[in-house]
Length: 125
Image 1 (cartoon, rainbow, N blue to C red):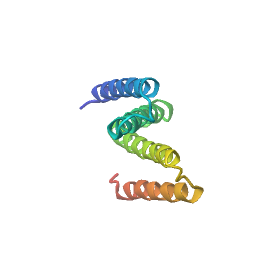
Image 2: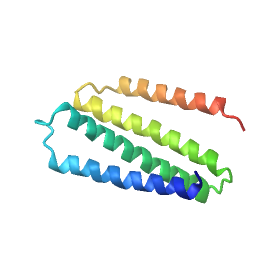
Image 3: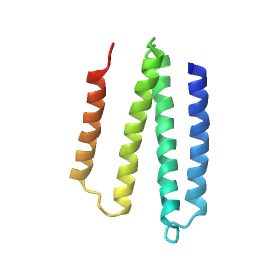
Image 4: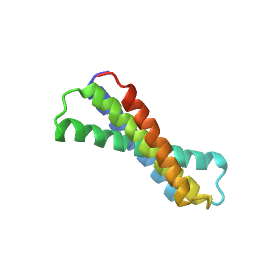
């Protein structure tokens, strides 16, 4: 997959997932919705945020920082978009269940940081 195809897929998935999330946000009652609808809410938000941050990260790396290794930058921005999206979804889910505490978020951030450091340390240059 070349860069243009990758960006096209990311843009389309971003657009569709934001539309799905907005539809669920405005047209579904969360108090009477079954578990499957709540799962779709979090899943569509996860995909929307991950693809948005992946695209923004790729644009920042390639066009602002002028990095030349585009496949490596695309992989890195995609991974970091997923990790950041996981943090946001975990925050929202814990908040909805009244389980959110500062130390739990700190543990989650440390775990995601450890995953990112693992990928950085195993990267071949």
